[in-house]
Amino acid sequence: MYICICKGITEKQVQEAITSRSSNNPKDILKALGVGSDCGTCVEDAVKTLLDQAKHAPFEMKDSSNNT
Image 1 (cartoon, rainbow, N blue to C red):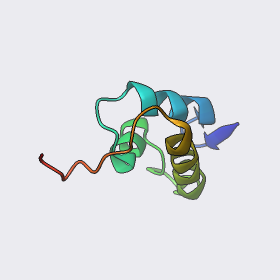
Image 2 (cartoon, rainbow, N blue to C red):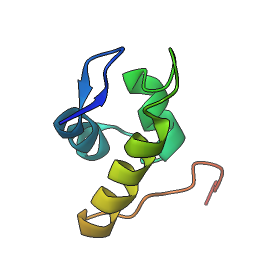
Image 3 (tube, helix red, strand yellow):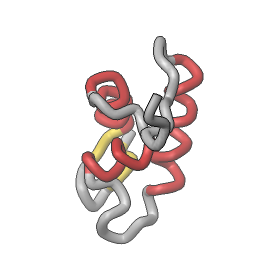
């Protein structure tokens, strides 16, 4: 399923970005993919996908502002 029509980003690409990026911060992931940079309609669906994936992912979504 397409998450972002403007950039052609699929749900699978968002899920792959979650597991392959060095940052687990949702904002960083969406920014790296370019999700929401054009019309912004997709942001709600992209965030939902990120949150759903985080529930099933073998890692925790981390707050990048935590320097510990």
